[in-house]
Image (cartoon, rainbow, N blue to C red; front, side, top):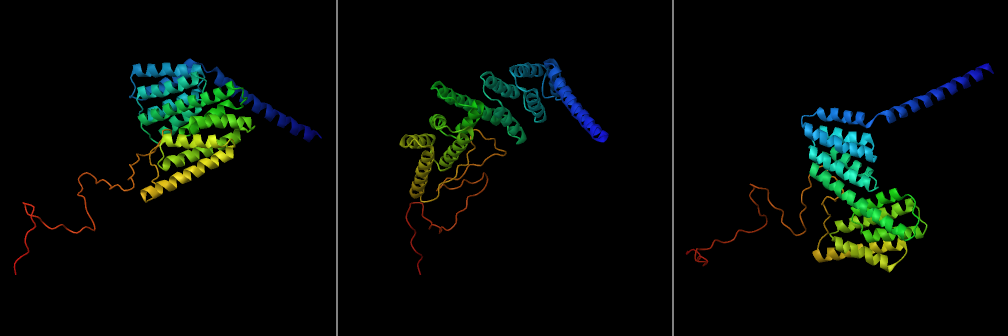
Length: 319
């Protein structure tokens, strides 16, 4: 009995110690002031010769705005560390922070932007591409929020708003028309579908849109295809099936017209970060261009007979 009580006491002390340690760590994080955080970042920036004193102050002022707006310190610190490591110039870093700050101040999720930035650093993507991608992502988040707000203004009660905004932004990134996503939210909510179901349907629409793009359809053609499908039915499953059937018909027609297979699109999506440059694909029926300095070669063609300067064919040799 004494042994049992002793074991219980030891277990209780271990639990109390763990709780106490956890509380201390939380308290320590919360007691770190903004000035102390900025000092940490200043030390990181000062470790590189790429930033002048003026540029360092500029970045620290922007970071201060980010932290005060609610951006997690570790996220800003990671971006600064990656920027120093990759020799990212100060004005490009500020542009990245400005986009994140604007998105945060509009009440939109910034996690997708931060993830894209870190993904770009991990893939050694150039600064122009990173800024372009997160700018597009930020715009898609705004459009997604508009879709959600429009549905809520019509009296629809939608749970998990931030998650739905992320889902819709991903679909917009994959060229799913905004009108189709607006229809999905309204119809799905009216049918009592949960976030998981709406996510699955949104991903299905994204897949179909990417398939349409890879099949050579323009943005306008994709938009019309989705619009017609939503007009022909009010059932979500039927609409997805109608889009797929229409797409298969378009692909089949394209194959018949060109006499070959439809080329896959090799263009980088506006929301993706390529890890290496993408070469331009050769269109069906095109002749590949030669590399500079290489002589073109021809195969299978017979040499043409020589012609005289006046254009007459020379007479055959006399026997």
